[in-house]
Length: 47
Image 1 (spheres, rainbow, N blue to C red):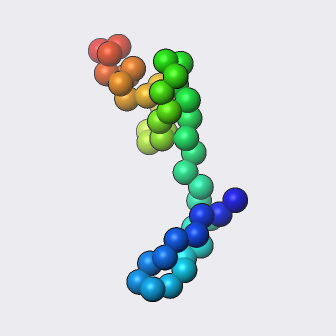
Image 2: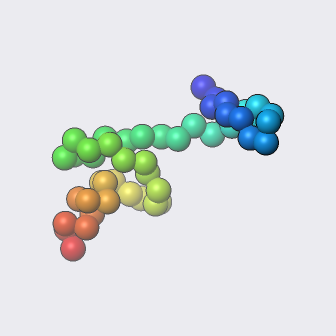
Image 3: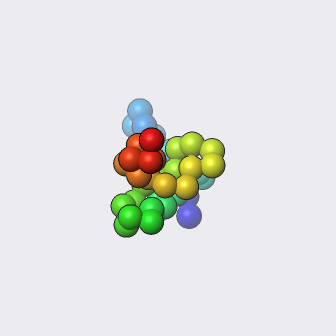
C-alpha cells in the first residue's frame, strides 16, 4: 500500500512504505541500518 501525503499544496504518492519491526524486548522500531536486528535501546545495552 502506498502512502499519500500533501507537499506544497499537491498530493504526493510515496510508493515506499516504512517498515516497523518488533524487537525481542517488545519495542517497535524503524529499521534504519543494514543488518539491524534489534531496536537501538537493545543495541546500546549490548555494548
